[in-house]
Length: 102
Image (cartoon, rainbow, N blue to C red):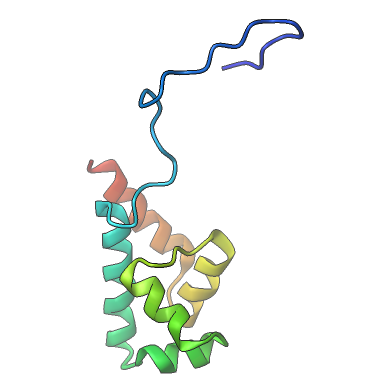
């Protein structure tokens, strides 16, 4: 879609006609990602508090990520993955596979 030219009439899409780029924290993809990160934390034998210490954040940050009360923005996602000894790019590739299955 190109930008409207100066003076052109812009017609906004109808409400509900656009997909959201910010899915619910309880969408299947968000749940998959949280479960994946929780599983990895447990595989490493880390408590939420231990992971928080490793990341240099407060314990509630990890707890909120795992319950879906907090989302990870891109830079935080990279740090979070590294804290779990995961490659962020491989994790994104797995997540992309989950999205493509929809």
